[in-house]
Length: 540
Image (cartoon, rainbow, N blue to C red; front, top):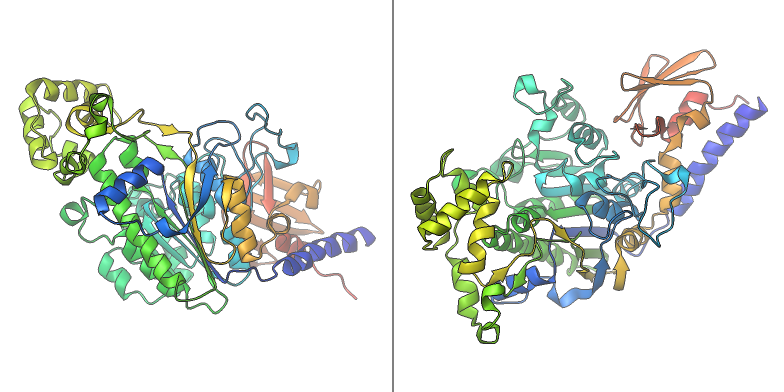
């Protein structure tokens, strides 16, 4: 009896301490806007193209070092994990603790931290009673939004990520990825046969799939996915996806809905496809999506500047493509580069490289490539260049359109590219409002600063949301078929992984946090609330 009472009181103490830790931070609302894959050089190009300062230029406060636990060059998943959790994690990890292997000179993570779920600032804001939201132009199960929504050891686990997103209880989710709500035999992308649409409807969400439906949605709960996979590039939307909303439209809608909560809100907005444009070395796609991001930042700042209680942070998770203004062909002429020479080639580009390439069909010929590039990118290329594009594309089975930027940019633009991958340089940091981070900081520093602005103690939040089930119920647990089973005092409790559901005594109890199984360690983590419910309150 004493042990049972002690365990119950321990769990109760965790909850009480966490409530005490939820003291009001300096900000009522926090909006984090992430320009995926954007470095200082891309921002410079965007300023020239816009012909005016960018929305965030007046609020530059520092730089962010982007390295992750096991690499000098970051992947989006651990980079966003640092922003969301305040912890530096490993390559491809989504808001779970790092591996043992780390960069030389970095502290080895304690064993208890490895692979365990890490509480996010979004989860903390939700438990404070604030409204929460996610906006992206990628699938919302993609790396950056996933880091705020889910806890898995690989960004490739999008089936599990979307399931956790549905059960996370976020008020507004807007982006792509509708296929991960429904099974493959119903035209979706899920391999587990689950249909999550009834779950969303049962939980009171509006489910818009087009821009006009989003505009008409009243909230407070909206789960709007506007494409089966990723949304269209901003440059292509009018031609190939006219029913999709733009990033600024989704941002404005999210702020309008979330700001109705009297306790405030947390919102993450990602300009997802800036990164993909850089991967493809595609200036047209880059500029268009970066301008859409600029308009979204302006929307957030317009809201924040009317009040004194909103923190706006604008940041990148890493640079991509290693873009430069100036390339090998300008080595001897860079000091005479005119603004017209820089911008005119870009202004003639009216379609993304990916959409241009798809228009060539399965058997592109040099003549087709020449014609398409002239019509879509305004470049008169030679037959030799067209043949080179086809040859480079043939070697890139997954992304043949990368050949366009790789072959044509060096000779037909003033831009250079060093890679189709990510690069490791520091990225600019912009912030406005109470609790603004400043100076040269790291990704985890930014996550901690966000938590402080909201008044969240991340350590207490982790103790509240993620209790090792075996430690709480030694010798009483088993995990099979995606379900944790706990036999305690003659009762059976069932907790499905990736959900916030406890089945006990014939009842289904909705928990305040997710059940997360860590396949690498075999451990399953449950909210302290579940421990309380299963052990029951001690009788007087």
